[in-house]
Length: 103
Image (cartoon, rainbow, N blue to C red; front, side, top):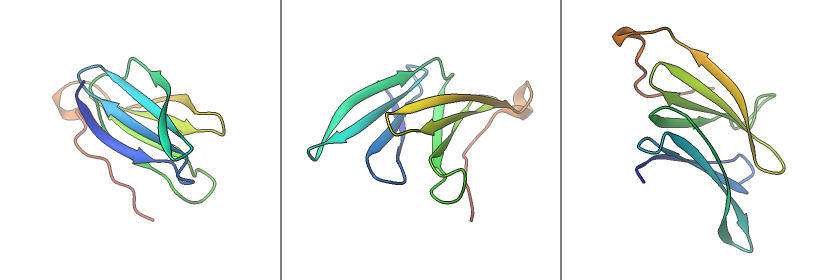
């Protein structure tokens, strides 16, 4: 495994870990103060940076950079759902580096 980013849910009950070599995003839950396996969303090509929206109507939305797109994931009461992806085009100029969100 090649974990590249870790991000906690706004309520602190789940964590998401991106893995670029496995082309996936794994989420873990917290139970009795310990991390427990949740699930994996794949493929997420070269999953890299992860940013969580913490407030507002989109709280819990996770943006994950993935080559030339941003994968949209959502923390839910029971885990995580895949909301699709936002393509930024094709070719070298569309490759994503880091993601950042400002209030």
